[in-house]
Length: 211
Image (cartoon, rainbow, N blue to C red):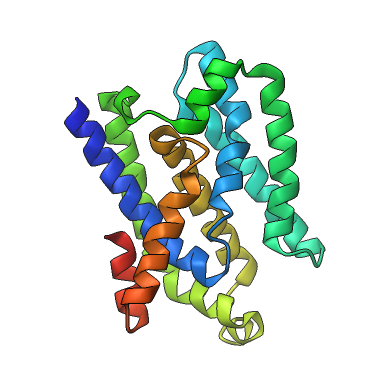
């Protein structure tokens, strides 16, 4: 059982690193951390009613992602500032319901608590994130470089930004179960930063991020 959990953790890490290369290019590599904390209200409900942590955290992360996306469209605030606002709100709500002992478990995570079914689901979702990130990768890179140029190329910037953010939501929900809300940012930031220093071109950068 532990072996399957470790394999699931490897798949999650691979998908997180690959997605992290996009996040780093958009200067959003630390956004996964606050989003991991934003999952705490969902984790509180999951622990309270005894269902899967990822299922509990995912709706709250998606809600936060959509709020960030909508405010990014309607304000001039950068994603980091919007994430901080949503993060503070989520944290305050979570600690109204989450006992101290369970809060520690939610912040740190425990890979040994992932069951067989959860491991298989995590592997499938990680592959889903890898596939969708691969499909949107070049377009999102162009959006990160220049949104106006991307629009001239016929790219729907809003749609691809939303897909990109939803991929982040999935990987954060999975990462919370493995490393907890506290270290979720490490899953995307460290592989991407290492890859950036070792790679010579975009292809190497994205591939090394998976490793």
